[in-house]
Image (cartoon, rainbow, N blue to C red):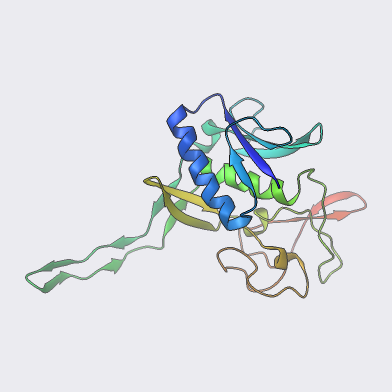
Length: 217
């Protein structure tokens, strides 16, 4: 059984508890067998919530440190803790049983990722590929993709309220996504309609003799 350890040198104790609760919810959707903790545990995958070791242009990344899957997630780069969601819906107004203004959808839903989005993105990909080297089975063109199931559905989000915080979680591609004969669902949200499909702004990389190259569908 895999354990994920959350550590931080920035967030206060109450925020860390809420982050832990949000991550536990997210992990329950991806792999319910995974345990999430803030108490040091031997052999655990590690997520550092810190601005140390930050990579320019990245809110988070994961690597293998002495064989241990390890992620670094930057609160400063992520800016918001929980992300931001606007449904685009203006509620209607009713007076004395009469509709004064109907409920209206004035714009599509808006999503802004936050630190929780970054943390969960890295966890989902660490669970899939802890050493950042695993490749998929070949796609219909014979390409083997680097196993990064959140990149494949990047820009798609789940919204769920945890402890009163409206959290923006990343979508995750499921195992069937990377099998040419896989059957739906291919991702948590059901956005993908067939294996190895990239819905913009999603992206992927595949292995070549010269190294990794971006997939162009």
